[in-house]
Length: 212
Ligand code: U5P
Image 1 (tube, protein in one colour):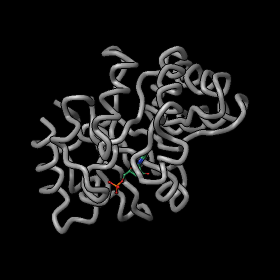
Image 2 (image 1 turned 120 degrees about the horizontal axis):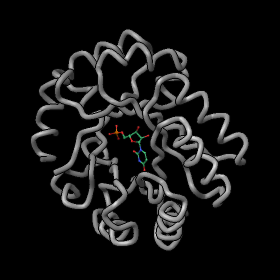
Image 3 (image 1 turned 90 degrees about the vertical axis):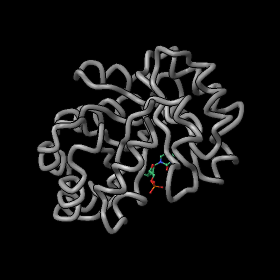
Image 4 (image 1 turned 90 degrees about the horizontal axis):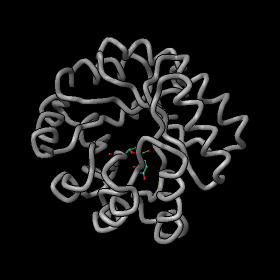
């Protein structure tokens, strides 16, 4: 049984609020990222707070420790409940993100293996497994692993164990189905297949039921 996270990659406050309101009651969290925040500013977090579900900032943080901490301060100061970071900058950069998240009462998820085909160049295989081990050692709350490669997500689950969460993108527009990964993960992340649907609430409802 997996939660449903909406990847709200729309542009502008009006569209974001429209989709979030339409999906009310069907979502367990909303994931925001650069497309939305660059078009609206971080104030969008307060605008989405009416949804009364956690807002997770997918900023795939990838910098030196001090900069990572400063980014976390802004994200959690804006009202986000969680942040998604990269791990490839190394254990000190990752620790800065995890620690800053926890200092602000938030959670930190770590990208280990990405869902798109190009992930096979760097963000997969042994690199992903090393990053999963690093995420566990850093005390991260969870990892991001691909619904498009369920066998890889199963492998990463084996590395982190059951005490950390896995959120999994790639369901819908990228071709994966909820049934592919739901037994390995705590949440599926769905974007276009919900926010581009003629009836986003119905689409969200269907994904939520299928993820259960
Ligand atoms: N995302 C991925 N794959 C990853 C990590 C994150 O797709 O490995 C994010 C995308 O940035 C997007 C969402 O926000 O998950 C998937 O959207 P969609 O393909 O369902 O539209």
